[in-house]
Image (cartoon, rainbow, N blue to C red; front, side, top):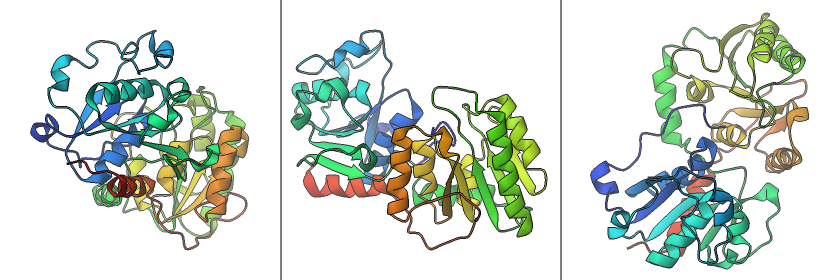
Length: 340
């Protein structure tokens, strides 16, 4: 989801970005673009953001043997854009893979691509210089495959520290232990069953109230109005703050993550679970009934790595290293490639 939260401010100045040797192909879906942007930000060098918009031909662009710009809506990539050729293109998602391949053919750049390249990669998979693939998708080993836990994202330690400072005063009335309760919803839907939301709210509220703590709860666009109100009713026994998706004011998602001692998150969002693991809080995954088989595999990979636990009857903390896969990918890029 990472439609929640605000952009990481640590991006390159516009003047430097215009001639930057690193380009980021920015898919319009926030959770997808965040993977490419997060890696670029961890590299610590100027980069140029290339916003992508799609037209109906996008679904066929992956069939082109030399990559294609056919799926791009105007303005797309123009000859003027190529006056300063990139040394490295970072992309994410199936739709941007064909664009990345086209740029490699026409500029000689290297490509770092996150997620499966889909049709664009069926015949030309070896031409991606680095494929960043989630461990839970079971990618076959290859010299150009680099596997990650969850998904890369933009929630760096600097971003968390900034969010903690920004929200410190506004959350100062909430006693510890603080539990961030983050709800998504069924994929491609806005109708989480209200009963599920209510029961989850009740369970968390009972545990938190018994410890004298507080809850920082947030819903998403997929939660739906009825489930949000059901959650609110379930939270009643505990001191809590609830952000309803779309309500006026700044979204506190990052502030909640940065300020939590424990995080309970629903099992349906790769992005939110991955971002939760960037903190040093205990992470519990709830409502597995909302998860697809792919989400179940993600959860298991995190359990096996000691990064998360299933939410059952406890909110106890345990030592857990912060997870920053975007930084690990950036280090692999530095190791493999020279961008001079």
